[in-house]
Every structure is written in C-alpha cells, then in structure tokens.
Image (tube, rainbow, N blue to C red; front, side, top):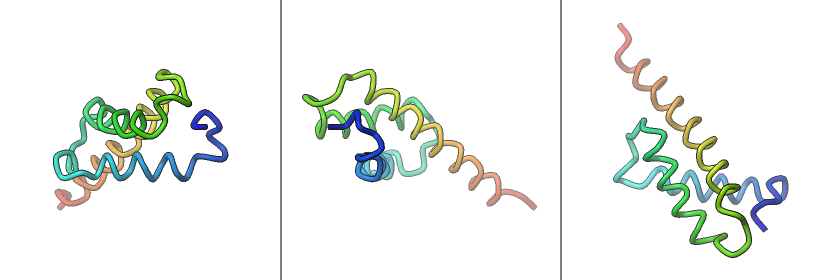
Length: 80
C-alpha cells in the first residue's frame, strides 16, 4: 500500500524519478508539470490502494526537489 511511505518510499521515489526523467520533461524545472507526470505514474501503480491526495502530496514534494536540483544545475552550468 502506498500510504505506508516508510516501507514503500524507495519504490515510490523510483517511480517518480522515472516519470520525471521522461524525454518530454527531462529538462523541465516546472514543478506543476513534473508533479503531473509523477501523479500519472503513481496512479497507474497505486490507484486502488491510496487516496489521490496522498499521491498528489508526495508528487508535489518530489517535483519541488527535482525542480530545485535542476535549477541549481542550470545555474552552475551558466556561472562564470
């Protein structure tokens, strides 16, 4: 069950990372766009075992982290 984040954390994070690294969003820094891809992936795996708000919350958190990391990487690449 997804809502048991302690037990499922690695699997959930792996699903989210895969979703947010698809070609269409690989370089995206848009948290909403990234969260949408993650939510779609989690729904396909956990649709019947976890409430939508739980999945959405984890997607938002993970997307914020990915976007922040990508912004930092972009900034570092453009720094003198």
